[in-house]
Image 1 (tube, one colour):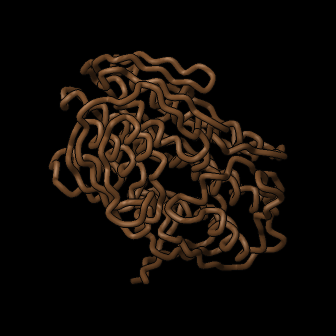
Image 2: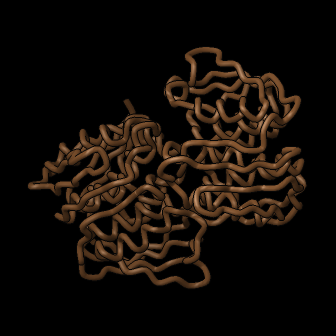
Length: 408
């Protein structure tokens, strides 16, 4: 197995990180662009494999849409193909075909789309077989499983003959991602309302426009974490803005409690160290992708903290709660289930001199554990896993003036 080793280093100078573009914004913009027949001018699209897969499949338009391991691409393309009357087979990696999609398919069928499962009911692979007429303009859908189901539906809603009213039932998870989708739609001329638990979109057309994608806040979170765990340093992260549409921008407020001060200018944000205040509880319901990052940070800083809003972590690229528990244990930290809604992060009681991290085919497991380098030598299995969202990650780690060692 290929691995990569980072030597221990905890003191850094002034480091500039040329952050990649947002995968979340890019993938949404690409679907909207497809719905306007490619008449927009999109710039700064993400280098992430998920986004590049979306670009390729939309451009080549094959009969079989193989999304590889891209969950967002699977969900967005399923709704796009189904509601634009395309006959497509959608599939992906074995893990992708274990990730549920039944809630979205049920909603699409209620709207009038004909969809057939080709394997296990409720999971890919599947086949979209046509969309002749809209059967309803009002849908109920759970809000607590994946906001991507909801985003997939609302992006197509303006082109439905009757429009769409979505009533979200139960707790709404990742609300900021839904709001980001609606804001992006507004940038392309589509009006909507999101009041309480109801989203309403009337029939209308997207308006071709120019759109530049922002830097990726999920990717930025690892640099916040690294500085929090370091003894000294200053980082400047390019391509971020304070009033972001991305839910993961909440990392600024969280890391302010964990020893990182943020100062924005026109081109990005400068991170400097400050005293650690600690934080008793964090709700990740609207920013689940930074939970791993914060867990590692707290573990290394000696900060116990209660986490909630982790429900969706079970159905990501891996079971991220299990994966966190396994890897945290390697340096004597733990994530303990307190009750059905709360986990307690218990910080490391002692630290080894070196460690090997298993990445579980999950890009965020590799990147979230990178800050361990401030305390010990770290070896990562399957380093190429970062290509899913941040292909230049290890190149950017090398900007820290450390000698990365690749083992084949």
